[in-house]
Length: 268
View 1: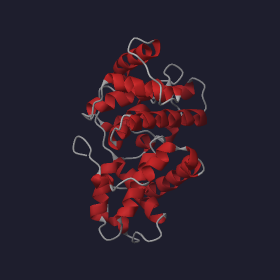
View 2: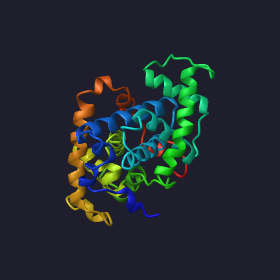
View 3: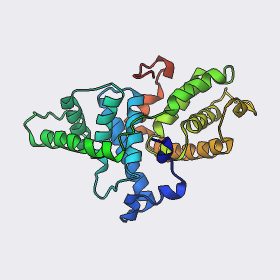
View 4: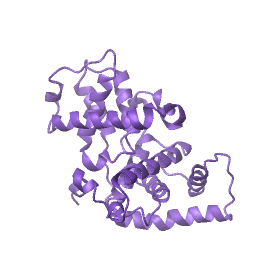
């Protein structure tokens, strides 16, 4: 099955099932961000690797290109996408632990305790199991995802001497903070990785890429890279820079280790 089916134009992004059902583009984008932030918080609660979470957010964005938020709640689909991603990336957690984390983050109460025979526990469990089939069918069982995160590490090797570990960490953080935006639907992973690195070095007081740095990159539209870097900066300013003091997931990533020090599954 061609990966091309999961890439869309900016016009198509504004013509989704949710928008056809009456939501504005801006409202749908905010709901995508809310769903992904919920997913990130559940993933952090379960101590899942960032790339498992990135796989889940990719499923989430793809799902809502074919289904409407009018009929599928973003939190429930976000939780289900994470459930599926833990299996695909062979980083599973007990269903009981996933259910409890979903309930805790849904109610914004990390101290919430649920027994397996309680109503909320049963509801979340049945929701995950029921929606799992819907998510798999909507994604046509096409579950392979290439992430810009791995390409970022390749770029680090290709640009030896031009970027420091600090800029790589910043770029990694920018990728993480951009998961709520549907970049994976608009840009190839190499473009996203290059844009994050470009933005990270521009935010650095020491690292600067050479004028012809992009010549080392094969099969890439440098115009798209610069366009996306601007979009990522706007997303960062709107959703993190102003609200950073109240966004726990942001602060937890700001001092993350170099990506090569993080253990990941399936070769990551």
